[in-house]
Image 1 (cartoon, rainbow, N blue to C red):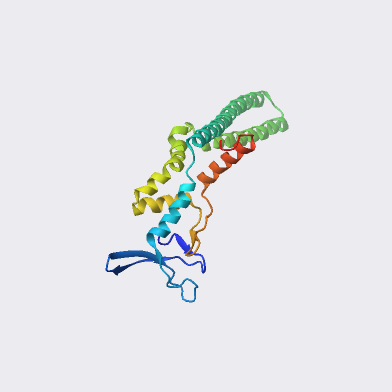
Image 2: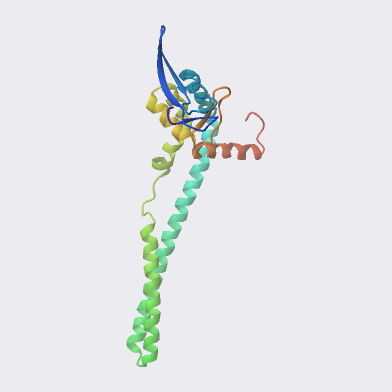
Length: 223
């Protein structure tokens, strides 16, 4: 957790160290900011990382909540996909209509002899060409083959359901990854009171909103 946990008294990052004793090596964290109330006072590594682990464990969603959240996100994903397809279809229809209007105006130009009328038709064709260019740009920025929910969003949703297992592995890189993805800010640690609950990252916050929405919709306690 080095660099990811701050001192509750001064806000500086806690340092990590290891000391030798008769029983072996003892890893710990401490604040090394001179003048800080907690300066030089060690916190056993297992205690600090255990407290942070307890915070992370509280974020573990139930299987039922994950099923509900996945269904809601799938519906939202499909709605956005359908909306994008509607934009593509509308742009294609408008381009077809513009081409027909331009063809009609060109025919009128060929049949016209009045210079002012011809100039008016040419101006209108110029405006239609600009509209066509805008529609073409709209098509260019829309994905021709939308990504599937299974390829893009579903893997993201698996993390909140499995993050505790990654933490329990105990590997330093796995734990740092979980902490970075679970919290939107560094964890503030009070050597007397333990870890304070930090700002939760978006995936877990979204799941919290789903839970709150469900409760407000009339679900019973303990649901």
